[in-house]
Image (cartoon, rainbow, N blue to C red; front, top):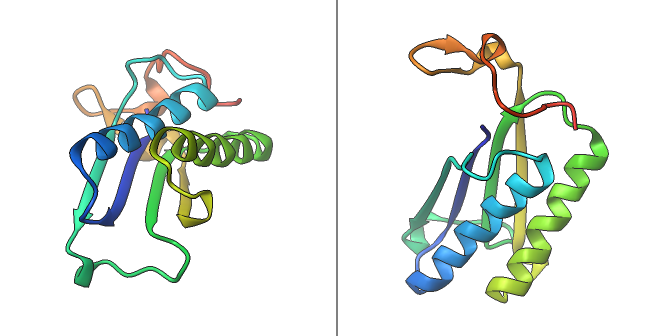
Amino acid sequence: MPAVKIELSKGRDKQTLLRLRDSVMDSVVETLKLPSNDRNIRLIEHKPEFFQMKPPYEILIEISMFLGRTKETKKKLYQTIVEKLEMNCSIEREKIFIILNEQPLENWGGRGGIPADEMDLGFRVNV
């Protein structure tokens, strides 16, 4: 159930953007052991004059997720994302900046207004 947002400057072709989107989301699903259809992702392209990051960064990936993952799982997530982007999109790993936003389950509402801590999520958070 993580919510993933990828932001970057305009300029890449559609197929590269789709591979980028899928590579990031596949990494999240695989590493966090989520159901394969648990995909909430936004890819946002900005005009270059409206997107600025300190070099060498060119791509910002923000992942909002529930509290509970171990440091080892988070480290594996970072590594899996940069490896897949390098392999599938020829994006240098040094150009990727990743931020995790972790929140308690009660801070997420879905399925008609039910707090996530009252839902059967269909996956374990403590991985």
